[in-house]
Length: 82
Image (tube, rainbow, N blue to C red; front, side, top):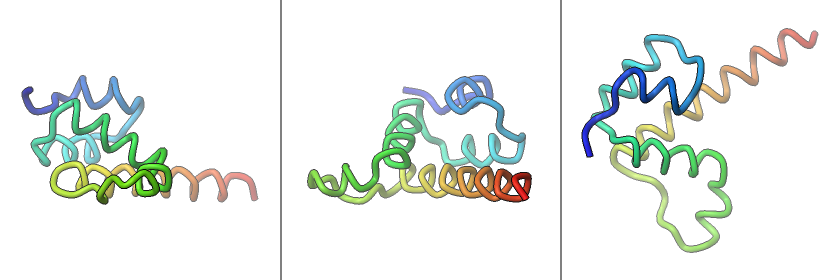
């Protein structure tokens, strides 16, 4: 599999800023690795509980980026709710 393109990142994640897209592409990750990272972010307790080792390498980098996006979105929602 080849490294992700901008279109693939946006297709997988939806509306994402250009800096985040560039960070994701810079990891050299594939679409499969991005999908795995998304699964980690959505189900990290479940995956760890089933014996999967914690995400590492490019998938681990993607998990960090996706968690950062999630935290930013949550903070934005919290501020707008006030």
